[in-house]
Image 1 (cartoon, rainbow, N blue to C red):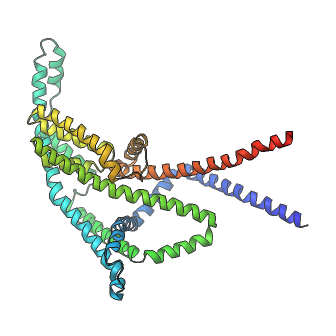
Image 2 (image 1 turned 45 degrees about the vertical axis):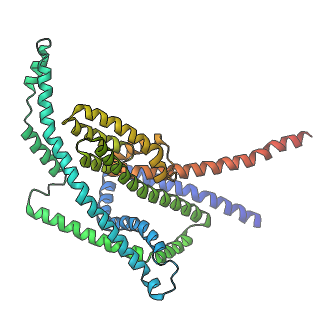
Image 3 (image 1 turned 120 degrees about the horizontal axis):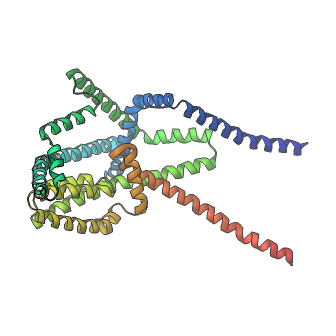
Amino acid sequence: MERKKTDMKEKMGMKRPIIGYILLIAALILGIQNITVVVTVLQTVAGVLQPLILGAVIAYILNILMKKLEKIYFPKSKNRLINKTKRMVCIILSLLLVIGILGLVMGLVLPELVGAFAVIAESVPVYYEKLVAWLMTYSDKFPVIEEYINGLQLDWSQITKNLVMYATSGVGGIFNSAISVVSVVVGGIVNFVIALIFAIYLLAGKEKLSAQLKRVLAAYLSEKKRAQLAQMVAVADNTFSCFIVGQCTEAVILGSLCTIGMWILRFPYAPMTGAFIGVTALIPVAGAYLGAGVGAFMIMTVDPMKALLFLVFIVCLQQLEGNLIYPKVVGSSVGLPALWVLAAVTVGGGINGIFGMLLGVPIAATLYKLIGMDVRKKVDKQKAVAPDSEVAPAEQNN
């Protein structure tokens, strides 16, 4: 009788996963058939939750600074007032540090970037005219060149207006009326204030929230599932935090070294180019090359030979950065081979532009580590089972 009950329980246990898989497949089929409805619902939910998502991101970034400050701010003090106000003081200091860094970037880097784009805008028409004049010298031998150039008349003022219209239209038409501008700005400020308040609450009560989350997980997940989830979260947290800190530090170092080197070698536009390379270096792999291309073009407007020497300088700086600075600053914690870094940047950029490029590497690194850990576990299990399976036939033969 007990044996029958055990068999029934085993059958029921086997049926439950199958039913779950069937329901999941049915939900996927329905979602694919009604993909427009699903996308609309997801967009609506994302719009409603946008301040909370932004607040969680702000809290995560501030938490990196806050944890370091808490280790510095009277770590062994027994004063009750200091211990009671420690968290709030470190949150405020973290906010001030972030505001100070952003202010420094806006004050020093942004004007240089604006100047760089102004130089490019002035230089492109000049070099276009020089290119046309050079091509026209060969028009006697190749008449098709003259026909093509005569048919290609570029109005640079109109092109500039079109670029401005394209840039403004991408924001959603907020420049069409003053009312829309005010509404968007006010809405953005309100969302940011809500996000900042939400981030402060998250940081102030993160231990309590963590305990509540653990209780919820304990109620709905088995101990094995909780351990797996905790491991995944720990790997993702370590990868993202190391990537954020390391990439920002590396961008500052690379931009500073580029500016100093250009000053020493007396290249023109040293602050502009260094600032641009520092900003673009936040994008892994492709960023520094983009900055180098823009810098070389600006220098070429002054002296083409110096532009060539600048490219040689950038290649040497890239070798120094790739072999010494990046491994030391970002460290091996990201642990993603160069091939997969390039793939992550390409796919992330295709999905969501620059923001996708920035997130692609840490997400890919997290998946790479988790898959590697799972593969090692399975290989170790196979190695542990293999000797037993080899010994058994030998004993049977004896």
